[in-house]
Every structure is written in C-alpha cells, then in structure tokens.
Image (cartoon, rainbow, N blue to C red):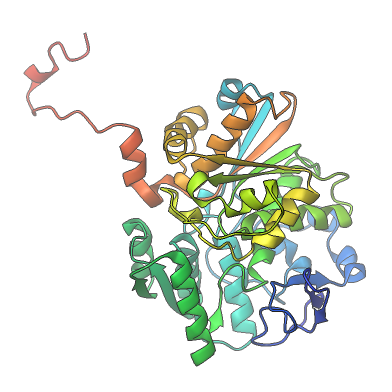
Length: 406
C-alpha cells in the first residue's frame, strides 16, 4: 500500500509513530492520533491545476491527502450539494447561508465519508471484517459501503437507535448487536470485541483514519466557493470527530494554498449532551455528561474525540452553542420550509444553534455561513412528525370536501 502518509502524531504527548496494522491510538499515552502527510509530495499532486483536470467528483479526487492508495469501488460518496438558502438566511438576518446537504450520500448521512475511507483502509490492510459502535448513521454507512465490496460488517448499536437506521443495517447485510444500554456502553463492547478477535475497528474517536474521510467536506466547500473559505461553518457535535475533521480539512487546504484564510467553527450541541461545548467554555477538560437528547446521532456521554474537538474550536476562534431538545425539534420544519432540506434532529441542532447565535448578535450579518446537514430527516421520522403535524383524516367521499378549505 503506497500513500503520502508520513507518520501518526499524538497531539497530547507529542509522540510520533509509524502507521501499522492494528495501531489506532497512541502507544505511549493512549490518546487519539492525527494522520500526518508528506506535504512536499502532496503539493505536487493536489493543487488547483490538478483539481481542474480531475473528472472524479467524489471524495477520491482528494486521494493524495487520504490514507489509502486507491478509491473504494461502490456507490459514489461526496460531491453533495451546497444549497443556497436565501429564505432561511433572511429569517436569521444573514446575508448568505448555504446548506451542505450530506443527506444526499449513499446511506443518507455525512458518515459515508468516514466509512468509505475506513472500509478501503481495512481492505488494504488485509481485513475481511469491519466492526463499529454507532447510534445509527456510522453503522448504516459502514453496512452500505461494506456490502458494496463484499466486506463483512458487525455493528454494535444502542437498542434505542431509530428503527429506520436499524432497517438500513439489516437490509445491507450487517450483523447487528443491539446493546441494552447507551452508545458509550456499545462503544466499549466494540473495543473489547476488537481486542478479542482482531477485527478492523471503525469507531470514531478511536480510529484516526475516519477523520480523514470527514475532512473531505471542507475541501468540497472550498472548491464550491471558488477556492475560498466561508466566514463560519456550523457543525452538529457529538463525539467531536466531525468538527475535528472539518477543521483538519480547512487547515490542510490552507497549507496547500487552496484557500487563503481559515473559517471560524460553530460547535452545536444539545443541552443534554454538551460535554464538548462545556469544556470549550470552561477549562478545556472533558467531563462526562448524561448524553440525554432527542438528537440520537449526537447523544454521547463521553466524547471520544473531545480533546481534539475543543482544540479545533479554539484554534478557529469559534463558538460553542447549546440548545434544548424543543429548539432542536422545531428547527426540523424550519430547515425544511426555509431551504428545502430535510434534516434529522442532529442536523437540525446546527440550525437551532445558529438561530440562537444570530439572536444573540454573535454572527455578523454580512458573513457567509455554511451549515452542515449531517443526516437526512427520513432517518428519524418520529421526531419530525412530533413537531410538524399529523395529517388530517377525511372520509373518501366528495361531500367531505365541502367547507374544508373555505
């Protein structure tokens, strides 16, 4: 396997190590690792001229800065639309608001970016089994992409995961282990299974290569804006892996000269699962929370990528905003009616937080804001219906129409 990786770096203790099979965390202190590249090699292969000649519009157009030697075959991942939302922008008092709709990915979530890289990385390292713990979206993405190349997937999920996400898993052939407990307990069981049987572990906040897939969204945003960075990127935050990946992507795009400045980040968390925002606003130390929120995709008690996420928010001179479950639910129809994008509760958390930040005068009106829609609303229809409306039931008789709309 030939890649441009130079080494893995531990941001906690400063240690560097070789990328080897089965190595996920720092061998010295156990912290999460960052993938580093040989930038002289990358710059020759990934630049504006090379991108202009590259017909591949998926995440694999950024292969020189990914930890695999070749693309994963199967359904195309990435190149999701950047939806202009002028109506919603006016409601919030913003000049420009764009929705990066990753609900258009194969499994209908942002997590396809990470799973595509992880599954291909597993194949290139000689694994035939991928495992992971998830509240649903990462699991669904892994099941879809593993199935496309004949890999086996064994997934640990909390028993309370939405049925639509479970349906995706079993339909695509993954073996599902529903844990009668929390996401964090499913995560720990998955780690133990990895230790016992040596499967490839895709867990975010443990496997450093998932962040590499997630960072591709930043390259796509920069390209879509004519090789420019927005002023602010709004990111729903659970375990911290997406926001740390978004930041890594922009930093690397800047290092490569693709953009000339960096955006600020807005970390959006549910009040009942706000360990990262709490740490960002406090002493920087992650403390466990209950992880209690309707937004299951970001319901985490102990965020496994929390330290790197806090660092990313601070390095961007960004914001951390928490919102209630009620605010999250009401943001679902607001997003749909204001932009034409259907988001699940976790995705709507971003809009709820952006709305609060705008109301508090924290966002200048002339900024260009990009908000990530991390999952399609069909992932959790119960939450959408709860706050939108139940249909009116009428008899199948023309007389029922009389006086109905007058």
